[in-house]
Amino acid sequence: MTSTPTSSAPASASARVVRVESLLHGGFIAGVFLLWLGGLGGSLQPSRLVLLAMLALIALVSRIVVLVPAVYPVYVAYAAILALGVLTLPLSTDVRAGLALISTVLLGMTSILFIRTRISWQGARQVRDAWSAALLCTLPFALYEIASGNHFVYALEQRDVGGDIGVLPFASVFFGNYNNYSTFVCLSYPMLLGTLLETQSKPRRALLLVGAALSLAVTLINTSRIATLFVLLAAIVIVAAAYRGSVLGLLALVGITGAAVWASGFNLQYAQLRLAVDLVRDQSASERIDLIVAGARALQDSYGLGLGPGGFVPYISEKYPGLIPNPHNLLLELAVNFSLYASVAFAAILVLLFLRLMRRRDIPVGLRLPVLITLPFVPLIGSLNSLAVGYTYWWYWMATAVLVSVSRPVEPAIRAG
Image (cartoon, rainbow, N blue to C red; front, side, top):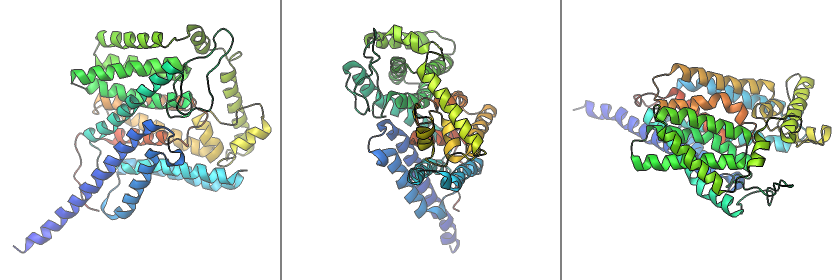
């Protein structure tokens, strides 16, 4: 009789841990899902507000939650990147912009703290499916933009190429421009296909297949070369795996995609010009190469320390006034703002996750393959938009990749810390 209160104390503590971990996991799912709202809210985007709320929760209950040892290398790499940003801040010619960038990156990185004890395959599936749902939510708005020519958030009024081609349809939804939206599609599209692969319900599978086809169609209409090639590759690999050699799924995907592209008034002439790799005539590609060269020179002159957070824009504006003053490259952006060593640390995380997932053949293919196929292309996808590291969806995606890489068949036993 006297042992009952003593034995109930650990059980009560474990129950509190379970509740806290459930809240954190729910916050992770909510944050990922709210990414579909893009830049709505400005600095107070819903997905960022979720991070702030969860940070407050973690601060309140830090004594009863536990970290995952397998994530320690990522914690260290993130801390190193932030430390290098602070140390190189005096090099920046725009300290205010540098502080804002460090703060934004720090907030995005905190998404890694969502990975606690809820690391079962089922928990990872819930996060993956949140990516799928987020992408599906953007499609009605994307199709409306393409059909009507009206846009929700965009700096330019129209996409007028001129000449015989004229005005082209595009979709940016709430992401500010179509390159930014295309980046989000690249990160979420394999997740959608992973959900499709594991779905047993025929109505749900049909919905996901239509969503996959329409996502592919929107990407083609936006005519981003990197996004188009990556999404096509992901579709072929994952859908082929889902249907285990059957051509029915691929035919349906191609048919729906083709119908949507045709209905949009897709300009084949412009698509051929965009998809033809001609670095001499292609102003966009040549300018990005010039930006890489300019960034490499800045790194060489600074012995790898870069220009300090926020220092790239004034540097390019002064030294190379003919170029767009944005890195247009994820790894270059990290290098010039946080130092070359920060870029190396980030690349090391990608390599670590890729190697870990290559070894973890026990993880279900619908979880493993979407992340595995994306990881090698992260640097390429990161060159779609003019800026990358300040966008929250990148850090949520990295946290998702880490979660999948450390996931287990069932939840581990929870002990109060």
